[in-house]
Length: 256
Length: 265
Image (cartoon, rainbow over all chains, first blue to last red; front, side, top):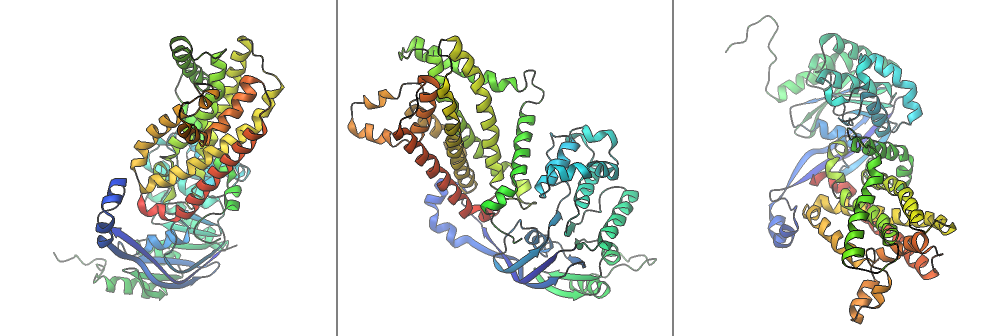
C-alpha cells in the first residue's frame, strides 16, 4: 500500500556560520564574533502540500531550489526547523544511489547492509536476493567488493535494492541519468510497475520528459517556495518561465 | 513515522543493523591479513608481554603471576578506551550515510562498542590459558565476569555516545582523546594493584583518585579473574552506579544533539 506525506508550513532554515565554530579555541575566543556572522539561509520556506497514498508526484525547480532538502526532510534525514511534517509508511529513499554501500564489502554483503539500513531484516533480504541479483544483471560480480564495480554496476545494484524492498513511499532523486539507455528503460518500467501497485512516488528530476511520463502531479519549487502545484504540462511551463528559460523547439536551430 | 530523533524503541528495532555493522567492522578489519581473526587473540598477548616485561621485570611491581593480573584489568580497560577513542570518529566517518538514510545515529558508535566487545570476549580465552599455565586455573568465580562484561560494555557505550557527539562540534577532541585516555589509564589500577591507591601519601589525591569511575569496573574483573574471589558489595554497587551513570550521561548528550550533528559535518 502507498504511504502519505503531509507538509504543513514546513521550513528548513540553515544557520550559515561564516566563521564556523569547530574548535575549542574558536569556541572560547570567538564566542561573540561568531554570533555576529551567523547568517540565515532558508532552503525551504512555508511549504504546504499533501501527498496522498498512491500518488506520483514530481518535484522540479532550478538548482538549489530546495528539492533535495524537501526530500531529505521527508526521508527523516533532516528535521524541519519550522512547521509540521508527517510521514505515514516506510520510505525507501534513492537520495543518492548506493548511499549505504561499503566499498570493502561484496555486492551480496551490501545488499544485506543496505536492507538493514532501510529497516529490513536479514530474512526479508534473503528472499529478495536472487531477484536483486537478476535485476541488477551483476551475475558473478555480486561476490566482488563493490569498490571494484563500474559506476553503472553500482547504480544498477542500488536501484535494484531500493526498488525491490517494496516501500510504501519511493523517493527518487535524479537517478535515471545513470546506466545505459536499455537499463534506463528497464528502470522506468519497474517504476511504472511499482506505481501501479499503489506505491506513492516522489520523483525529483531535471529531465522534464521523464517527469511528464511518470507523474500525474508536479510541484514547482522556486528559491525554496512552492510556486506551482498541479498538472505536469502547466508545471513545466511555470518552471521554465520562472527561470526565464525557453526550451529550444525541436528542429529549429538555436540562434547563437 | 516522524522525522527526527530516535528513541530507544527505534534503536531496539534496528538491532539487526547494529549486528551487521559489527560484522562489517570485523570483516573489513581482518581482510587480507594472514592471521585474520587471530589478531584479536594475539594483540592483547603482545601488549601483555610488553607491560609484563616493563612492570614485573624492570620496575618490579611485585604482583605474583603479573601477566594474569595485568590482562584481567587490561581487557575491560581496552574495551572502554578503544571504543571511546574509535567512536570519536564514528559519526564523522559515517557522515555520508547519515546525510542520506534516516537511521538512529547511535547505531554507529554502538556498533563500534559491539565489535570491541567481541574482541574482549574472545581475549578471555588466551587469558584463561595463561592463567592455567601460570598456576591460577580459572575457577567458578570466572562466571561472575558476565555481569562485569555487561557493566564494562555499558560504560564503554556511554563514553562512546558522549565522545562521538562532542567530536562533531569540537574536532579538537579527536586529538585530545588519546592523551586523555592515556592519563586515565595510569590513574586506574591496571598495571599496579588496587591497594596502591590506599597507600598514596596525600589524602586529597587519594580522595580524588577514589572518584575514578573506571576503577570499580576494572576491579571487578581483577577480583573474579585474578584473585578468584566474589566481588564485595561496595565494588558491585559502585561499579553498577558508574556504568549506569556513564550510559545515562552519554545517551542524554547524544539524544540532545543528534539532530544538530548534520549541520556541523
